[in-house]
Length: 262
Image 1 (cartoon, one colour):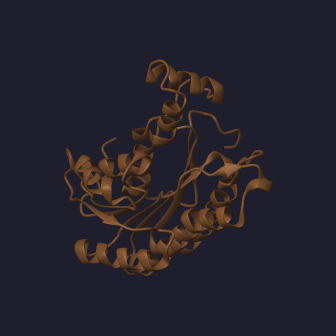
Image 2 (tube, rainbow, N blue to C red; image 1 turned 120 degrees about the horizontal axis):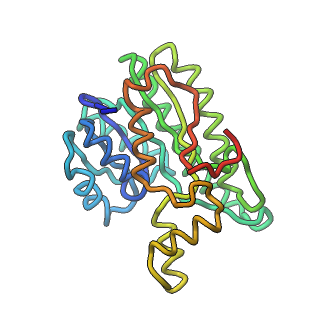
């Protein structure tokens, strides 16, 4: 299926690497103009250049700490000034944070809530009125399998992602009469910078592909392999498009069968 996003503008948080960067590249290749939003100035321009290869739409970088309301408001205004609108919002920012419950500090809870939950709330709140006025919008929230099936030592991420899943369902009901479709993508183990850091922390022993295979075996992924960021991006592109015009309030597992919950 060929997905076209011509004439659409997307804002993607956490867009400078991993899932966000792959999604930016996929959207741009499908014709959308894309605003990559991330904190790290050092890699933003390079990320925009990478996502722009083979793009039919424009790709531009915007530096923003999405855990801060003032940054979010300024960046949303800047994206609108540059592209004129935001049709598609991908709330993707946030690194995995987890540990024993008694060891999670007040500050760790605050940081995780600000980054993963309140950033999605604040950006959605900014986008919603404009999307309603145009009677077209897409909001896609990145979740993980612990949002549906928490385990020991998965806080605070399991809690903030579960809250974002509830936000997804609530927003979908409010947005549906205005053709604002809100869905979530539930990721399992995806090839990422986090896995690369684990590989390097272990002394980078053996080939990278062998490390990925061992990681898949340890995680007991039914498909027997680690997912690729491009596979997440393909699912996001479908949700963002008119091909998914009757799909809202849903979460889709992009996890190789790892989640025990549908």
